[in-house]
Length: 289
Image (cartoon, rainbow, N blue to C red):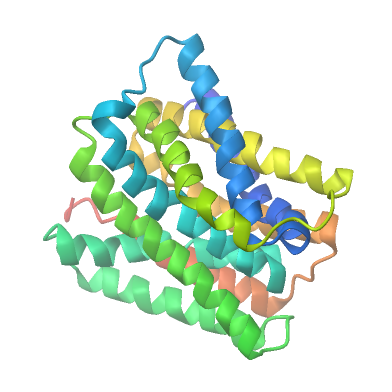
């Protein structure tokens, strides 16, 4: 991997790790629905401007169904779930659970794509479940029903990502990656819009919350997508997935530095279990490959 690719990888991990920090700031003030809606709406505007400047067509007339499905499963539902979790638990917790996404991808691949569920992947699932269990039961936050519900919301978000991955494989031949990124954000904004009336904003949020919401949308969605697709093109999907290992570490660091969130041995043990699980699933031995 070239030095420039490594820098992009670290930048992407730092940005996506910061997304959990920003949600932790925004969601308690705006609520889960508004946090998600603002994120996808601003990201849509930024990505559409980029496509317009680069003269790339969105083709909503022929791809609207795929945009709605991907927008719902890959953005709307996960963003609402993570925003709900951000109200009730530290940013590092959400990031660690988020790192189990490849594990659920392996499960969905076995169920829907006839991919082989090897003993290595079974061991990875066991390590991932153990890591999350260590975090929930022994982490710095006292165990409660609310904490468990927040963790389950994060698990639900990772399952959504896995399902979206299955669907995107089916439509990737007809839709470019940039169209998929922009169209899915547009679809998510459209899906969430009717629900905004259920939780109207009670007051104008303070400026730090507004800035965090803008960073969540423009930096952690729009800019992050562009970096990620560049990495996918330059180093391939397997190496690009290395970012999954780094996100929890950055999220723990940002939460400690800016929110005063505790990092305990049990937190690190849970993080290590999830990272090990992801490595077992993502990187197959050369003989198996």
